[in-house]
Structures are given as C-alpha cells and as structure tokens.
Image (cartoon, rainbow over all chains, first blue to last red):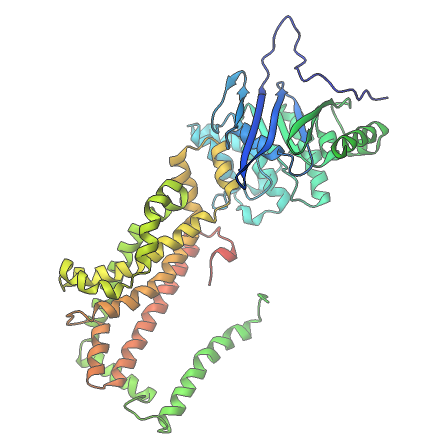
Length: 269
Length: 260
C-alpha cells in the first residue's frame, strides 16, 4: 500500500546540515479588492522546493494557484509574506525564475532561434556562446529543424516546446510552469508530459508546475502540493512514491490510481 | 463566411465594383439625363484632365498637395508613435495625455483654422499644421488600442527572461505593436487628404484642393471631377505602398492583424 499520510511542510534537509531550499515561499497571502470587499485569494501559503525537484501544485480552478505562480515570478506583489530563491528574498521579476505560460507567450516577430536567444542577449552573453546554447536547447526540445521558423508556422505543441526551450536556455534557478499544456488536445498533452519527463531527466532543472490535471501532476512530480480554494491554502504536501523514470503506462497501475483517487478526494472534499 | 474565393471571382468582383458606378455615370451623362454642368461625361473629364496636365501644369499642383499631405502625415506619425506607445504601456502616461487627447479629438479641426492662421500665418507651415492636427489624435488613439491588445503573457514572458522596462518598450512592445501602427497610418493617410482640402481653402495658389475650389467657382465640373479622381489614384497608391511596407516589415503578423 502507498502511504498517503501528509508530510510535514518542512524540507527534508538533514538537521545537522541545513540545506537552503532552491525556492521557498513563507506566509504568503494575497488579498484583492472585489466590489469594495477584501477578497482573500491566497492565505498563508508555505512551500519549499529543493534543488532538482519537480513539484506540481494542483487545485481546482479559482484556487489562486496561477496567482501564486505569478507572485513567485515577481509579476505580482504579495499582500503578505515573501519569496526566496536560494535563501535570498526576491522582489520583482528576474531571470533566476524562468516561466512558461499557457499560451501566446512566444514573440511572434522572432524566429524560434531568436526567441530562445532573447534572454541570452539580455544576459550579455557572447554570440558564439549564444549560438551554442540555442543549438543545444533546440536539440533538447527536438526543434532543431525549426530554428528559423516563425511561431505562426508551428503547431500548438511545438510552440510550447519552443517556449520551454526559451525558458530552459536562460538556465534559471527555478522554472515555473503555468498550466503549460492546458490549451492542448489530449494526445499532444500526453506527448508533452512524456517530453517534460525526458527534459527533467536530461537537465535536472528545479521545476514548479501549476496544473488542474491530477494525472499530469502525479505523472510528472516527485511531490504534489494540493491546494484548497476560497481562500487558496496548501491542504497537503504529498510525496509521490513512484519510480523516478516513468512511462505513460504507469497511469494504469494501482499505485497511480490510488494516488489519483486520494488527490481527487482531497480536491473535492 | 470569410472563406477564400476562386481566382476568377477575385478578379471579377473588383471589376464589377468599379465598373457598375462607371456604367451608371456613363448612362446618366451620355443620355443627357443629368445636365453636363452637374455631371459631365467620362470622356470629357479625361480630355479636360489631359489638358490640365499639358497646359495648366497640374503636376505642380499634385506635387504641392502631396508634399503637404506627406509633411503633415510624417509629423503626425513621429509624434503619435512614441506618445501612443507610452500611453498604451504606462498608466501614468495615459493619465497624463488621455484627458487632453480625448477632449481635443472632439474639437473640429476646421474650428481651429482661424487660430492656426493667427499662429502660423497662411503659408506652408499653416497648411501642414492643419493636416497634422487633423490626424495626429486619431493616430494616438488607435496606436494606444494596438499596444493594449498585446497579450499580457508576451510582456510577462519578457520580464521573466530578464527584461527591464526599457527593453520591454523597445524590444517587445514596439515590434509587437508594429503591425497595428502601420495599419493606423494606412487608415489615417486617407484622413490627411481630407484635411488637405480644408488647408488649401487658405490662401493657396496651387494644389489639388485649391484647383477643386477654384474650378467649382467657374462651374468647371469636369475639372473638379478629374482632380478628385487624381486624389483617389494617389490615395490608392499610398495605401498599396503602406500595405507592402507592412508585409516587408512585419511578415510574421497573422492575417487578422493586417487588414486588407
């Protein structure tokens, strides 16, 4: 049987040697003014990601998970609490937190290669090094042949792969993904889930992904944060005790289905 | 709806579109249903026009008018593009410019003409100023809308790749808004010709608008019609040129962003 008891929210660093988490969020709250009433969207959220972890945040729509990701990215400011990257508090957006959006985020006037190059140029990287990086990451996402294509010439799945390459190429400390496969059809979605698994195996990037798709969350993550809605709170921090390398067939195993049932129950409580 | 049409239809439709009014014009004028002084026949308009070129130096008028239109148009573009980009991007800039732009946009430029004469006299600068004032505010309003239509995710993506505000404005917002900027200029160059005729009401001694007004005084309907046609041809040419410019500068734009 799979152990489904919630884990403590604290990190698993050994007590003698305190490991600084890659990304941590402490006591984060967000309140909006809605029809002149304060509306609490996020209430005292704590999360932590260790280096090389692939974590998913699942929650029903409207639970504030996208807001949380935007605050972590620095695109929105919290009402209370703070975000730390490698122990340093961050304010505002920065290239240490790369982000992949649900759609429409590629620059349509730039080719795929130039899109990937955008962040590298801002870092002031030399041309030769930029070209090597572009070639490497386009190869990682399997778009080498489309380096000179414009975004409008790509399919939806290819656009997302290009956006992922662009975020990866910047080599951020953490990669944030906001329902990156939410706008894709079921087949493409599964392909990209497998693709993300491969990406992680190749790069060991620290990834925080927001999704409402429970299967996707279990398939990809080492740990899942389950969120409550109204107000958005972390309900549970659930370890996914599946082997590190997973094939799509794993979605049909009893362990997987148990985890799925558990999370679905928690979301529907 | 909005489906492609076969090539023969693509060629036929414009011919019908232009042919029908021409046919109606010929029918009314050659039959004498409408008096010559109100509506001269097409061939009379053409012969008078050619005469104007040969004997009356119409080229000089065309150059004078085109120069004024281009002067006002370019000035309006140079002023409107940066202001439009800033207003569309920063709430503070919108707060600063928007009350002025919205209020003045409703004030007819014709009403400013007496003031313009006092400010700028009756020479070339005054005429260019009228064309400029006529279109600059429309340029700004339309460019602001174009900037606001840029998806948030594109801007947010740039921020998370390390862009600061200046990079965002110059490397993201400007290129993203370029198709709608070119569109705006295309729409408003037609307006520039409207205001040109108004401008040439001022003591002009040459120009197509001036020609039209003077010919009207002598009831030379054929000349009036010919000059109007010339403006139409120039308009079509500039429209086509700006459309080509759009295709060359923004080949990446989707169909919908570049209206035909």
